[in-house]
Every structure is written in structure tokens, then in C-alpha cells.
Amino acid sequence: MAAVILGIAMTSKQDEIFNSVLSGDLENIKQLLESSDGTEDSHEHDLFGKVDEMGRNALLTASMLGNSSIVRELVKHGARVDGPTVRGYTSLHLAACWGHLDTVRTLLELGADTQAKTFRGERPVDLARRYSQADCTDCLTQAEHGQEDIIPDSEGHHTGSRGTSSTGETDSASQKPQRLKL
Image (tube, rainbow, N blue to C red; front, top):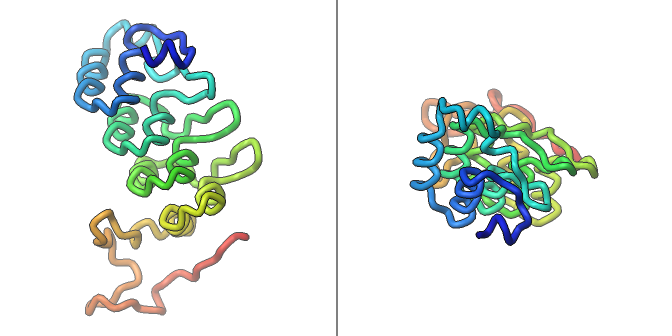
């Protein structure tokens, strides 16, 4: 029903996936995607190719809503992590501007392009900055400079040891310089 309201022409499976994304129903998405894997239906129809009137597919919508588990599941089953809208917005752009830090981290882990540009030439970090999403801005700035392993996870733990000494203190000689592109 939500797909009809949004003006989307989809197959019933695409409709079910999109509705499950909108409602946050990860278990139903898993069932739908696993039942489609390797079937003729999954090859005949791109399960992620249909979009709403704004050009958002299931992955873009899940990213905009900040549902990292659904994002991970959709990519696992073939959704393109950097698939853009007609105006060039990717899942990373949407997660960043809406301030969904966990989803930004998930997308980065899945290989999202930090340099993808919208029709206005804006990267995800530019949108995060414009909408005052400081945590997302910091995370994306660090990722752009190859420092993903020093970004703390949602519990505040660092995932790597770059720039730390054996005592856990920062070793200034091993740190990469921070550069901001203004």
C-alpha cells in the first residue's frame, strides 16, 4: 500500500521489500530476499531497481531512515551501495544529512564512495556539514583521509591501533596530518 501512495510501479516482491524497508521489518526482508536468491524472479526483475517519485530505491530509503541492519541486508543481496538518485544522491549522502552515524559507518564499511557528488557537486561530508551533523561530518572527514580504523564504534571503542603507542597514548609521529577541504 505504501508503494501505491508513493506512486511506485513495482512487482509484488519489490513492493513487499519496499514496504518492509518503510516499516523496518528486517525479518520479512530477509525472508523475501532469501526466497528470491538464485530464482528466475530475481534475475527477471531487479529487486532494487524500482524507485519512488524522488528517485529513492529500497537501499536509499533504508539509509535515509537510518536502519543499518536493513542496509547491510540489502547490500548483501545485491543492492548497489553507491547507486544514486537522478540528482546524484547516494545512500551515504542521505545517511549523512539525516545524521545517522551508525548507518554512515555501515555504508563506509560496505565500501561507499566518500567522494560521490550530487548534481550540486556536494559530497556526503558537505551535506553532513550543511545540516550540522557534527558526528557524521567528523566520521566522513576521517574516512576521507584513510583513518577509518581510528573512528570509534557506537560504544566508543576504537577499531584499530593506528597512531597509538603500546601504552595506548597517541604517538604524534605515526598520526597522519588532518586536512580539511573548505
